[in-house]
Image (cartoon, rainbow, N blue to C red; front, side):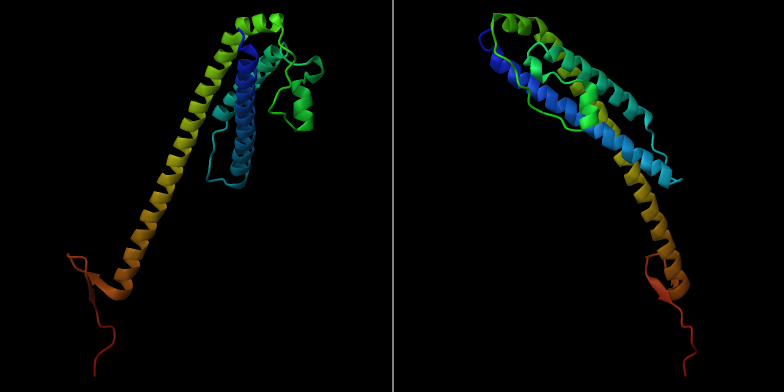
Length: 179
């Protein structure tokens, strides 16, 4: 109970940083996915998983701010609308003095903050899985393009240089009669 001020500062600052980092990632990822789907008809990027995770992060941020308000100086309360309009985010809270009331509040709400932390961790795992699957599909596309290019080069070698023997060496045909 006596370590509550230090715990609150560390826990809430870390959680705020992670929430804002995930929110910024999803905003950027959705913007990139929309621009890719507009510019390229060949690429179809699925935005739905990103939107669902983004909405979850928004909800968690709202819950976090509501619970955090009990520990902030009353001048420091910021609404979601203020953050969206200004575009600037403070990653450090200005917490008020910790009397007995705030220490007891921390003991009662600590589990709620840890639940949000666990939810953020699960969303980060889903995000990493999403990025990994997208990266894997891009690698497969590049691999297919390289294989296609290799086949074309092979065909051109045979056409211009001659027949390819079983051992992989090329038998060069004379195109011009010798004197």
